[in-house]
Amino acid sequence: MCGIIAYLGDKNSYPILLEGLRRLEYRGYDSAGIALLNGELSVYKKKGKVQELADLTENKGLFATIGMGHTRWATHGKPDDINAHPHFSGNNRLAIIHNGIIENYATLKEALTRLGHQFESETDTEVLIHLIEEFQNRDKLPLEEAVRKALNKVVGAYAIVVIDKNDPNKLVGARKSSPLVIGLGDKDLFIASDATPIIQYTNKVVYLNDEEIAVLTRDKGLEISTISNDELQEPVIHELDMSMDQLEKGGYEHFMLKEIYQQSQTISDCMRGRLNAIEGWVRLGGLEEHINRINKANRIIIAACGTSWHSALIGEYLIEDLARIPVEVEYASEFRYRNPILTDKDVVLVISQSGETADTLAAAELAKEKGALVYGIVNVVGSSIARMTHAGSYIHCGPEIGVASTKAFTGQVTLLTLMSLVLGQRNGSLSNSYYHQLIAELASIPDKVEKVLASNEKIKYLAGEIKNTNNTLYLGRGYNFPVALEGALKLKEISYIHAEGYPAAEMKHGPIALIDENMPVIVIATNVSAYEKIVSNIMEVKARKGIVIAIVTEGDVEIKRIADHCIEIPSTIDPLTPLLSVIPLQLLSYHVAVMRQCDVDQPRNLAKSVTVE
Ligand code: AGP
Image (cartoon, rainbow, N blue to C red):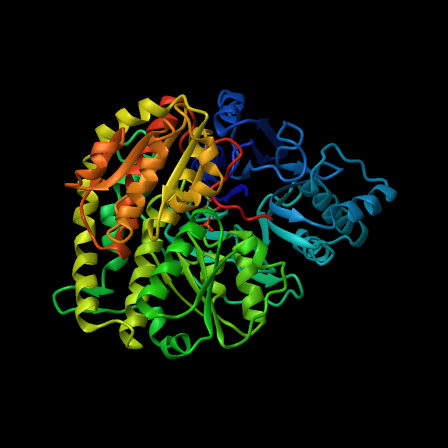
């Protein structure tokens, strides 16, 4: 996905846009560009990160009170200076920035070419600005009317901002399936992909809805209509409680490390007001009115992507174990296209940190169309998924800036644990004693997280042991199997080492052929149940000269005797293990990536939220 920021006010937009792009860089960083209107409509754009753009522009004395900026994650057209946004119309009167995909761009391009339009780039975005130009010229329309007409011809996803050289007091924004937020300052107006570049100027925001058009002008402020008609709608203003220090690194070298160390606090934040260990209760506001329908459901389907899919797998173990409701886990990208059988007796949980992942959003929309109850587990307040589901719970982890998800994962697992407790207690699956034992143990997890973090130096040493390997295997059983998958994803996405997660017992059915003295094998061996089995699995690896790094429960002696290295974590009960066993894997991948001089917070080819298919 891409990052969008636009400004209209009485200040110089140039530094505001550049700072905003730096805050949005986690959304994509193949190229970056700005457009400034000060009599002339000037565009500066460059392949590479925002710093490349800053190097290109910072000594030019740029000044304009209206402008926009874009940081790109390429979909159509390779990352280069020409395909970078903003894009001009053919007459150089208009400029556009865009996040999304225009699916019918080729057809539109052919028609425009026949009308004499010529294109510089390979992008779908340039086609859109030429279409807007065509309507403006043909029908002599104001900018917002030309945008409205053009968007009615578009199939696909978009979040756009358009500037007209002949209308220097106006910004026009519009969105469909890609997020857009309007910031309302005292004299300043902003449009951005999310609140992170706005919050230092104002906490008053309006979330644009699908197929809405926002017109921002110096005299009238914000006016919202839709692509189907120009009737004005009353904006809903939200006051955000996000703070600037939440966006800063807080003294850590990378956002990822900061967010790993925040997990004791973020797990506590996720439980605040929802769990009371003294009085012995768990409550989930968003769940209350739907508990009966969920407890009577044929099944719960959990749809998600990436790390959120891993927490979904843990959700399956938790809900079936503690609430005895059948659960199926789906990759959202597969679920949305395989024509699944769904009825109103089904419940679909969608899990998403950003709340903007295109596949997960589409899966939720499909489930809603088919009559299922759709419940969201989301981090970003006001995100698209959060606003379209029937109900949901926020995980309250604050902005997660590092592309590799860490605190959101443990926040999701915490929320799923709370949900399982509520459902299991209400439908009688959970005995009173076990319910209270789980509550007490869950309340102790934040302190236990701090103890795990205290092993950082030892984990950093082990990172040095594996940093030059080309392949690794992660093994776990039961609740720790999804943790093995998550640990493998962390390593591969930030250190670029191939890593594979596997159920430990499954290793004998193939992956064991990979084991030799060059293959580090990370085994999560904290299980209470199946402990002897995991010990055997470690022996099988050692018998083939594999190097074993084991995550064990503190005080373990048996595995210490056979593994090459052990990282101890505090003991807990199996259902809560993932909240602790994942942390050494997060730190291990972090340190390996740093030692390999990888870009930890913005790994190559990745983006924080994939808002395109
Ligand atoms: C996780 O480290 C990755 N950045 C990625 O797999 C991510 O979890 C996935 O894209 C889903 O994002 P979401 O939770 O915002 O929907």
